Length: 113
Image 1 (cartoon, helix red, strand yellow):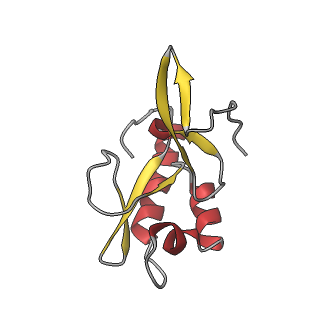
Image 2 (cartoon, rainbow, N blue to C red):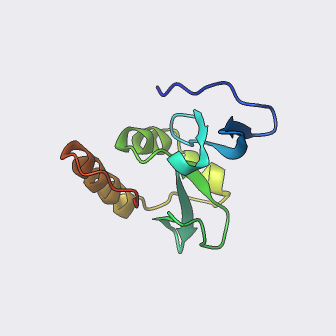
């Protein structure tokens, strides 16, 4: 599990004198800075990553880590967090996160998941 410093009650964390938004990962349920998480939205029953945070609709946040995705799927957290009925297709997201994890292991840090 990830360690997170204590946050204020209003969902913001102080960094360098500025407040930054904090969100909760739907997989591991750990609160993190919004920029450390990947926003996901549903487009026609498919989970779609939204790295820029511009796609319309309700979003859910997830650490860009296959383990967090696995936890969220096992807990059936996506339909609940996104308020949509039925199961969602996360196969494209799973492949993208696996590729991102492989690039990180190779030492090439990629900011865009």
